[in-house]
Length: 143
Length: 71
Image 1 (cartoon, rainbow over the protein chains, first blue to last red):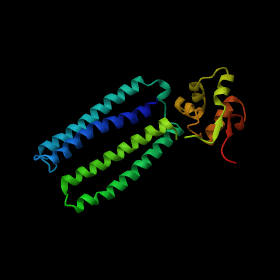
Image 2 (image 1 turned 30 degrees about the vertical axis):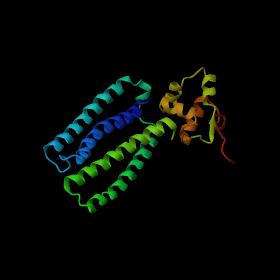
Image 3 (image 1 turned 180 degrees about the vertical axis):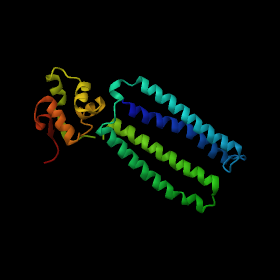
Image 4 (image 1 turned 60 degrees about the horizontal axis):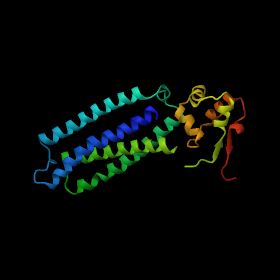
């Protein structure tokens, strides 16, 4: 497995874990009496913790991946890898554009401020996951 | 996903003194994983890359790649 494919896996796993936990806590809190969607220190701590965990995990796992990848998997990107990057980011861009337009939906139903910011963050997370999954698919199954 | 191009790279590598995928990759300026993907029919190289591969083996392009798609 090349270093870039390992990076795609790292992105997929770390974003799923960190922001999966963040949004589960955030939206899960909606079901209860003490939901945190509206703001406050708890939701700020939650976001900061998620971002910090993501950064630490990504740095750690990326360093491990770099150390465990043989030299022939760590070279500059060639035409196939550039094509994979191009197609995956193009797909992620289109997903993000659709979700960005979709943000009008919660706005029409009265959501404002921090709630809309969290919906926008969710759109970015979904687009990031789309890019990672697309890259992994193309590395595994072919371009 | 099956590409409509077959190749003889694996055979040509063995005939060229059992050249490894890494050695071929280094000579054509690509990664070993890309050479493996080309051999497995998972990636169609660019025209330039195809010519570089043929040049390494000292054969023509059609000795390395064959069109297997619909006529």
